[in-house]
Image 1: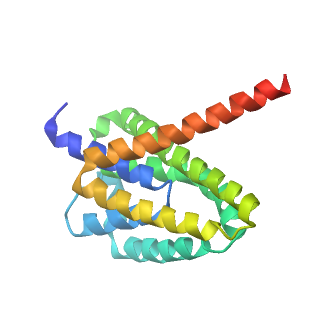
Image 2: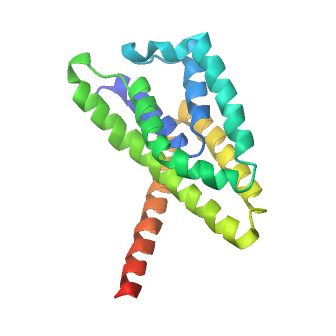
Amino acid sequence: MDHNIIYPVLLGIALAACCGFRIFLPFLAVAIASQLNWIEVSPSMQWISGWQAITCFAVASVIEIVAYYIPFLDNILDTITTPLAVVAGTVLAFAVIPMDDGNALLHWGLSAIGGGTLAGSIQGGTGFIRLFSTKATVGAGNVVIASAENAAAITGIFLSFAVPLLAFILLTTIALWFLWKAITRLTNREEKIF
């Protein structure tokens, strides 16, 4: 693999995984980085670096962060953002990972498998933790979870740009752990039924 493509592939997948913690913060980071010419985005995604997109992502990020601090609304948001995280992770990975325009299927496939799957796994896992917290603390503990997610999103974004290999490894490990826990839980539930 060409060394010039390794950084953007790791960056794209790691940033996409951060969509599992907060959907709009990674988009905001990519938009700003692209506007400042720190990174290149795919030709079809050039709109992401415009000031209108940056403004929209900034406003959406603030609204998303604040909304997750409201008990029970955060659980409702999880039902919406879990499938949305898969789409957002796929689109963000597509924007950052450079590919030959003649190979759109490979580009979208890599983006969906790498970015969408990780983002969806992380969002599903954090949503499950929040649901457990809601049951255990009647929503009072969800503020801690929201703060941890915000910190994880910001840290993940920072690491993605600074040390993309480390961010990729950490975020993939988190996503795989969430997947493993979900599969284990579903398997144990099926065993109890029979």
